[in-house]
Length: 384
Image 1: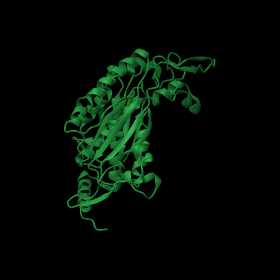
Image 2: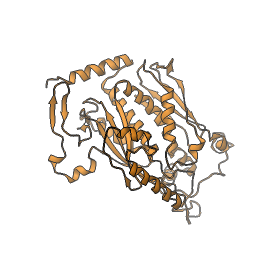
Image 3: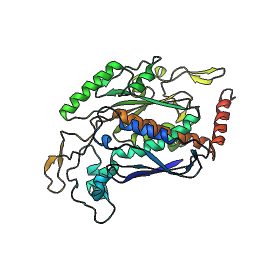
Image 4: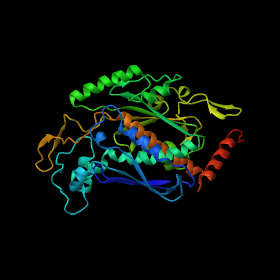
């Protein structure tokens, strides 16, 4: 599979094309819209989210609720377009001066993009904006529907926001608490601390980052490959996660702590269980060894930096006068960590679905499902 997206933050719409989805797969528009709304919610979100009410339109590749095997085209309209049409229109009478950006924001793509493309900053920030992730969530939702139909479960939670760290004790109702939490955390004490930290950041004109975790369950051993650097599953997941705006690092399993432990406290002993096949006694590797899934849950963590747009802006340089001035303030969020978790879950879903179809090439979903089940069954008693 592959996909492309296009569109600007204040453009007319976001568009996407998915190629390679097998035919006969149930595609739910309602499920896509649900995760798009979830992406827009969360504490600390800005005024833009009150304007947009994202809804996907399926333009092609789906008929009667089933994929046809042809490319799937999607679009998400920007409701704010009506306020920006004269500025963002493709026509040669576009108003290029009224929202021209001459004071690039530290931490954004503004200045580097303008230097690289030799263009006005507005042209850079419109595409570099995290608004672009709305379409990637929509595309990832369709990939996630493929995985759900195969029994693969993806879930995520927030581990920290602004230095407030949640306790992760996976009790019986832990994930239910995560689902009900506006912060996507399972620790009520930490959640209260996050509200307080958000209030302080708002008063100070600051922004907050955090730590997020995504888990993928019921994935068999053998997705990805060790034979070339660009086929390694952890490498592909890392690239996808770090492509999301504001993500600055990723780790798997126990992550960077592995560098501080002895080898015997890092690697996972191997067992064989009747009816279960080969298993690990622990999962410090996070479900990936040698660039391949090993049958344990895939667990990754990502760190999100605070959003660079600050309502108490940092110093920058005016692009014409070269004088030190305060950076531009575009409408922005104070904290988007829970929203970013929704994005991460769906870029991860895409990579896993892509790896599934790489291992089990299929033109129809029935063909994929049969190959998937046969392979999983073979792993239970495979002789090496």
